[in-house]
Image (cartoon, rainbow, N blue to C red; front, side, top):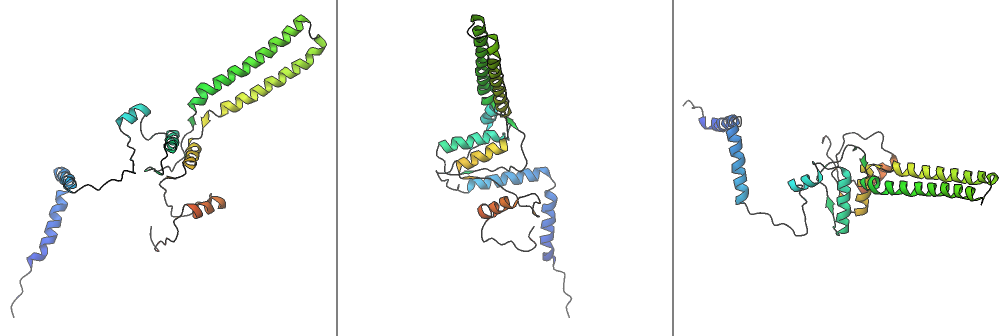
Length: 227
């Protein structure tokens, strides 16, 4: 009976795998592998792009004009409103909004509407005070009648105070709510979502039912043990 020689060809795959594993530890090999991959991408014909799709890139010019990326959610909301005005059919966000964002400032309200409102309300109060003293000086009303005008002036002042406080309270804007309203106005905006392994305990039944009816994929089964 002949003695079988060990088949060395069975060792070849292991030797090759070990060699490539060792090469992965060398930085030059990793960079060279990436260059070869890029070269092969250029050799492969490009996938034809549909003219109906528009990719909005955040380039250096946009960052220089707006600020460091990621941008605050009020800017993204303004972008959705502009896309709505241009008649865009869909908007897909390749970014996750998973944490609450800090409150923003409504710059237009702070710089324009609030100063105009303060000026208008104080002018009204000043004019009423001026008219009251002018009437007293000219004798159009007596001192006994001045009490009623003073009470009306107090009511006017209190009404202006409440109006100004309410308007100032609108300066701090909830950007999350603003983005949500802009997305609803747009109508066809899609955002990435994350699946959690366990149900959230603080989600109301109304919101849960809305997600199941409008967001969840229908007729999709997840295999047991799937993470």
